[in-house]
Image (cartoon, rainbow, N blue to C red; front, side, top):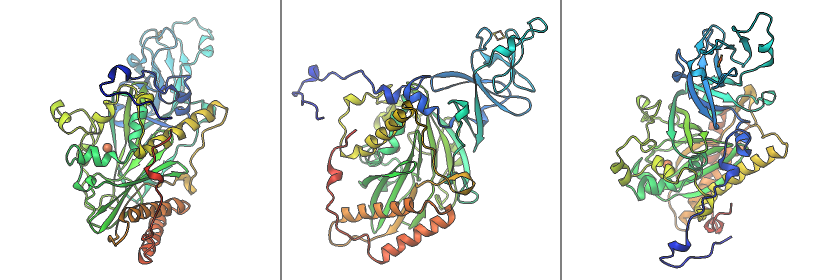
Length: 462
Ligand code: FES
Ligand SMILES: [Fe+2]
């Protein structure tokens, strides 16, 4: 519903609300969204952070301790010892599990109390107690945890982009964000900002091609939505289509496209999760992909990727404030939305349809779980691999007389639909299939169809 317009100089009447959208933003134990996020495997640390000492970690409002026992198994347990609450970050790692420093209780990685050494012989106290613990899984240099009901642990989803092309090299990274998780995740469904924040308003941050205003579209996928930005770069059209995967995953193409060479890349340069530490802090944690399909010119910088760093400008607060004020990056824009963005204070526009669509999808998942349903798990190819839809596509499609915006929109729509409709094929043949389909459309002039669809000019509805 439209808000009443306030008079000029009417700040007095225009005080912002402080009531956030708690159904989507609050993540602690027992909250609707916290329960929902706990139904999915979440990366909580980089494997390289786990050395020979226990480390305190936070996730979804819980204080935890992560360690690797001397037999090589990862343990993730509640931070406070179930005897009298001292932190297990001071625990002594053993061959099997961890021993609390205070009175020597020993816990296995699943929380089983192995010993209560100060108890009299024959004591059965240890059988009555269990330390809170969670399952873990190591993948691609990341430690994932499942923090939901253990009897309903889902299979670990291996996205196709993580295992294709053959030889794909994954480099893990983790960045801190002192704000609510949702506003960071929503950035993935807001492609118009790549033109304004990363070029038009602040100067070129990635490549000059980003300054071209894209047509945007948001397609439903079995995983969530595909956020499609299509631009003209001279004689070429360039699609940057980003997977936004429920509940908190996204994938992106590269930041260094200049649009000069044709490209078919049904894969990703980044796969990342936005994992809440609590309601007002989160981490961006994921992997950068190195392969010849997504980055044929080898422009990625592996040495700039890791704990607190990524080879893309503006993703951290490490630049001086004066510099960030002149040319703010993603970190500045998202953190500056406040500790928790209050949706009531927003005025969503026609370019915010992806944000609105994402919120609706998450809200639907949260409510379905509350109503007793289980979150849908992604469909898979054989061998448990999950098809995804991220693509970076560049093709020669010259401007002709007529509506070039409609041509650009048609191109983005048709190529991304070909990617969505081919999800039953395994990754390699699928890439070739989509290229064949798109080149056939190009030969037939199928993109040159006038569109009268004005719906994209209407504001978004949440
Ligand atoms: S507080 Fe841990 S053993 Fe006593
Ligand atoms: Fe961005």
